[in-house]
Every structure is written in structure tokens, then in C-alpha cells.
Image (tube, rainbow, N blue to C red; front, side, top):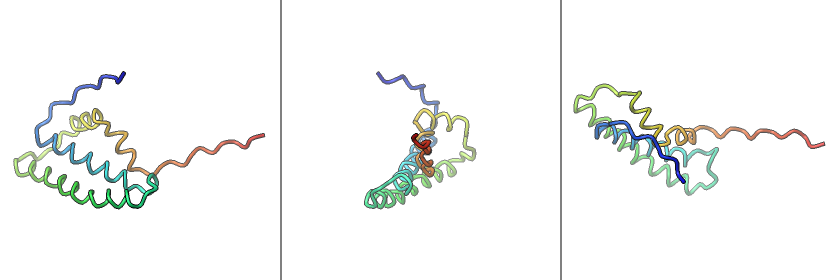
Length: 106
């Protein structure tokens, strides 16, 4: 049984688009991360997709700016990112930690 997630905070359409586009960029970067991937073709495809996702993120921010939305409500947006598994997803962009060394067997 899957645990029930907390509800998403109320977001404007532009804020929702920003969060979605940001996570799309993060997901592409995590698939490119050389410390986590073993397949050059998959990393290449993710890198190619990253360009379009970055453009979509830029467009989402441009729309917000042109509408006069000059502030990002970081507390609300961070809550939305957490509900959408953003902490785990952004963690995949970081360099994979070294495996813990096992003590020598006696």
C-alpha cells in the first residue's frame, strides 16, 4: 500500500509550470550524471533532451516575469518540490557518494 502524500500547496498555473519544468531539467541532469550512469547513449539522449527542457524552464520564468510576477515564493515552491519527490530527484544530480569501505575480514 502506497502512503498518502500530503496535498500540493496552492500554486498559480505559472508556478506549477515552473516546478514541473525545473524537475524535468533535474531529471535530465540526473540521467547525464557520469557518476550514476553507465550507458553513454542514454546520457547522450538525456543531454539532447536537456536543451528543450531548459528552454521550457526559461519560458516558464519569462511568462512569470512578463505577467509581473516578480517574486518566487520559495517556501511554497519548496513544499511543492518536496511533495513531488524533489529532494530525492535533486539528490541524483550530485556525485554518487563513495561506498563505505568494509572492514577487513579476519
